[in-house]
Image 1 (cartoon, rainbow, N blue to C red):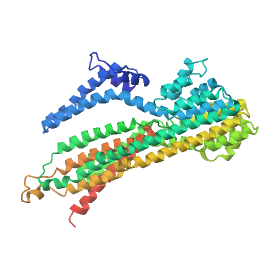
Image 2: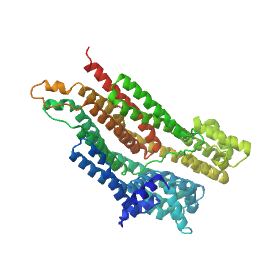
Image 3: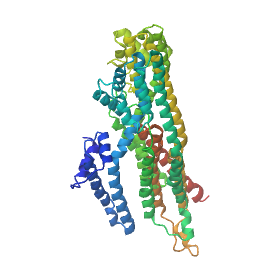
Length: 576
């Protein structure tokens, strides 16, 4: 049982009453293959609400306004209930988005298999067996239920997913039609099936990018820029006779505002139509360091060094919170750095697959064997892709294995490269090894297909970067500097400064120590919310990217924040 499932069952035990679940919740729980049912989720939500209402109880022992505690209790209870009830919907939406990102590859594999042999049944079997995501499993299920039928489950599969990806219906219809098309028309029909799915992907992502421009700008303006501007007004508030309460800032900046940012972020993310799934790196991958979790000690060391340094040099009141934030960031960098390095290596292997496939396809079409074509590609293709083909060619020469074994076997070139795209390429080359010369055109077509897909992905990411880059840059650089300048300037204005001015005896600034801690916590939360949002909009839900870039943002924001506070103190406060 996973931690998530154990938590759901544990929370459900706190509310042992009968409940009803909506049809939407039932569908979401079924889609994510959860080990609990929808009624358990509903009861878990009510249980979480009870716990959430108890979280603010310790505040009763402090001198805190009752209204603040009441709002905190209500917010925590309602937020906890809604969060648990929404969790299956969110997980299902994210998995569906990532699954649909594999649609061009799935249809592409089926099309290319049909170019070798015009059998729709073989093409559907090949497409489903060479993938491992939800989309491939769904296609396999439809195929198994429809064996012996004319369309091998393809059209029923398309109908199931067409609501979320309309182009899939047209592409699947063209693919099914190609089986019975005359030989002269079959190639054009298959090409149109590929074009339909690629154009559908491009259109949906372009519409999504256009639709999030205004909401993203509003999120930046009202969720980040305006709150930072309000912090900048704190030093001037007592001059206008406005009394400030630190608990108002705690509630707004550390509870309400982060909760609103999380809600807005999820609202944006569930509307992403497709996400191109990144390579999945298992924790037991041989290229990763043993006991990866021990690298979190780098975070402990970073926190200790910063705590001692800030305590000695100042501002000492920020030592604890800055040390914790930067320490967590350093730990995330240490843990996810090797994973991201391996991920980048996989991307480098995929970088020149198009060239390698084109070389192999042309040689096979001219009558060369696949084995000799792979050897030629090893010499002509650069970088990591060439090394993979060189490895495969070496395995073939030394062990006299098949093409599939040379790439995917125990000693194969791709055994430790978790790239579905590269594995699909190897599976197609294995078929070409059996089919010979007729498979050459299919391999060249696969190269063209990969090139077009790469162009779609690159175009989509370029457009999204223009929309989202402001979010993570603000969390990492702009926000910490503005917050640090505000805290530093607030330190210039003390209660004594105002009691010396007529009419302001009752006004006072917030204690600088309290304001500094509230702003630092806000910046930590901003890094943990805005950074994942920015990268999720670009690449989809990717834990490795989230962990690494959150770590980098935490380190930079905490260091910039404390340096800005210290520099303001030196430049403006200390006597010349």
